Length: 394
Image 1 (cartoon, rainbow, N blue to C red):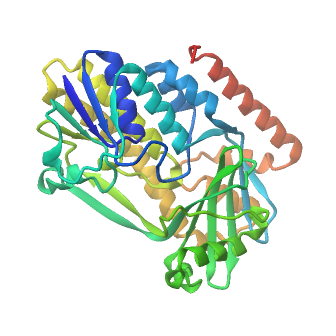
Image 2: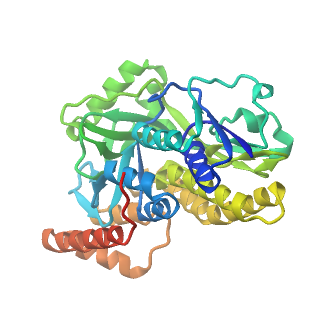
């Protein structure tokens, strides 16, 4: 079977790894437009559920990801004029470039043919293949060549945001909020390597325009943000890597396959960064498609139908959660007047799904001793879960 993956992001590379593991005789090619080591974005976040899946599907690449990941053990909320508060939980982060390096190396070890600097300008130029996997992002050219069949719809979010990096290493996952003369502006930040953190800034369009970002060049805009968040950055700079301010684009598609073409990752669906699940969902797409190719009894059409049904079913609750979460941030100024503990709980419960006891737990664990005990409990849970995963030489 000949398979071509258009796009060498986490979805395309990981699917290539799994498909080759399942059947080494498959001829698999990955076409990536960027050179090796060049990618957009900074770090990505994930949690135990993805790690469990990764170890189940390919323990070798999973162990490399685990070894490279930055581990953080709570959320910190820093809002102007309020005491610092904390939210229970833990997670992992990793530089996107490092993740792609790990997956690219693993694919090459297995015999996948990865072509870098291969810009697809015409889909007719694709080599002959039994299956074409379109994992070329939210603006997928493969998908958009047949808009009537795939039925892609794009909903543009209200808030403006910019994806930045900084050499300031945050202690843990941090939400920071500052009130300016034009309104509230905030960030989501997390460390992902020694000397590097992701720093995503978000605000309403009124605040964005009121602060003059619509009239500033990128350098001036970064300087202004460094001034606004000076108390959070310890004098370190911000870098936007040339992407600029954006509105989130929520992509949905009516169908995920057409003939021998199937969509994966952001080409099929996007999920707002407010729940930090984009990379996880893309890699779980890869797992589901690899499973479908190996288990569907009636050939490729049945496999692609099985894949689409499984993933749409799994995505539905997460997309609802992402919609609720992004909506909370669009209404964030409405919550700004709450006392510190109530504000951070509203942030934590922005999906609106917590039982009443979670509020009591949140209020009870803001003091130093109960907070430390909660962190110890969660750390023990993390390491116990890690211990149950298979060990592999890397």
